[in-house]
Amino acid sequence: MQDYLRNLRKPLLILHSPQDEIVGIEEARHIYEGAKHPKSFISLDGADHLLSKKEDSEYVATTLTAWAQRYLRRKAPHLDRNREVPEGKVQVETLTGPYAQAVTTGRHNFISDEPVKVGGDDAGPSPYDLLLAGLGSCTSMTLAMYARRKGWALTHVSVRLEHERMHAEDCAQCPETDGKVERITKRIALEGDLDAAQRQRLLEIADRCPVNRTLLGNPTIVGVLDEDEA
Image 1 (cartoon, helix red, strand yellow):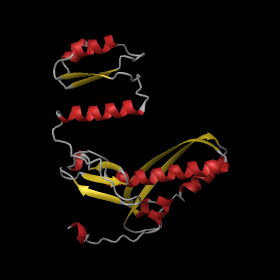
Image 2 (spheres, rainbow, N blue to C red; image 1 turned 60 degrees about the vertical axis):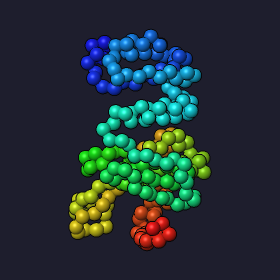
Image 3 (cartoon, helix red, strand yellow; image 1 turned 60 degrees about the horizontal axis):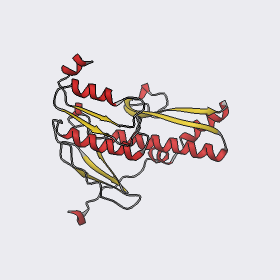
Image 4 (cartoon, rainbow, N blue to C red; image 1 turned 90 degrees about the horizontal axis):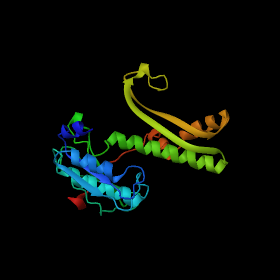
C-alpha cells in the first residue's frame, strides 16, 4: 500500500469520521502519511461509515465538488441553484463550455451536457439520457402506484432503458418497414411475491405511464421566439 501511495502522483482527498466504527483513524493516518502532496484530509465529525444521514452525504458531495475544481482541466460551469420556475415548466439556458446547459425544473437545478467523446465536458446527463430517465422514472412510478392500489406484493422495480437507431427491417416491433427507425427498449425487473399473471399485467401497465403515452402519441412541438427575454 505504501509503495502504491508514494507512486500515485494524483491529488488525494481523505475523508474520515472519528465515529467510524468500521475503519479506524489509524488507517486514514497511514494513507495520508504515505501519500505525497497534493493531499488533503477532512474530518467528518458525527458521520458514520456509510454516510447514512442525508446532511452528511450532501456535505461530502459539496466538499468534494469544491475540492476537485482545482484539479479539473476545465472549470466546471457555474450553476445558480437558487433559480426557480413555476411548477410544470422547465427552463434551459446555456452555460460555459461547448454544450453545458443549466436546467431548472421547479426548484431543482442541474446541468445537462454531452459526453467527452462528442466534444462535451460530461458535466451532466445528455439530452437523450434525460429523455430515457424521464421515461424510466414514469414507468417505475406507475408500476409502484398500480401495485399499491391492487395490494400486490411488488417490493422493487428496476427499469433499464436503451435508445437505438436501426434499419426498419431489423426491428420486428416497429410498424415502419422502410428506412431507419428509432427504438427505445425498456427492460423491467420486478421483485416481490408476484405470480405470472401479475407480472404480465404489470408489463402491460408499464406502457401506460403518462410519458410513454406522450412519446407514442406523436405530440406537436411548437417553437416560438420569446420576445420578452430578448
